[in-house]
Image 1 (cartoon, rainbow, N blue to C red):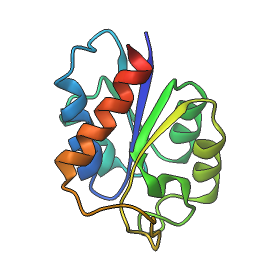
Image 2 (image 1 turned 135 degrees about the vertical axis):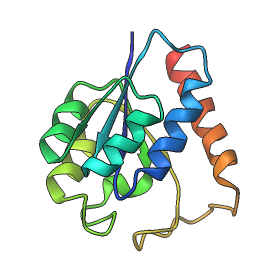
Image 3 (image 1 turned 180 degrees about the vertical axis):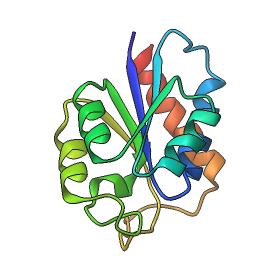
Amino acid sequence: MKRIVVIDGQGGGLGKAVIERIKKEPWQHHELLAAGTNAVATATMIRAGADAGATGESAIIWNCRHADIVVGAVGILAAGSMLGELNENMALAIGSCEAVKILIPFNKCRLEIAGISEISLSERLEHMINLLRHHID
């Protein structure tokens, strides 16, 4: 059984979309955890179907240590992203954990990623699912 940790902040909209898309897959035997930078993001991801959720710096650091796969926007690797909700300790824990990191590219948080084309969120989520399949199957 793999532990998949979805990290999001602000309103949790991307995390919600990620969790809803993952739940469409036949991976019910894997643990799907929501780790939010704030309570609203965590609650949104839990309502989307996460098996459990936790909020804040300590929760993100702990869950990254115990994750097999971490999923989130590319900004989760950058201290100060998500309007400052993601701090240096969180970014370090995410970036240095042993888990496979599946990052969804967005040109936000003053991070511009070369080679990223303008595709819809649903297309980005399909790319994320294909990467998850590779690591789960």
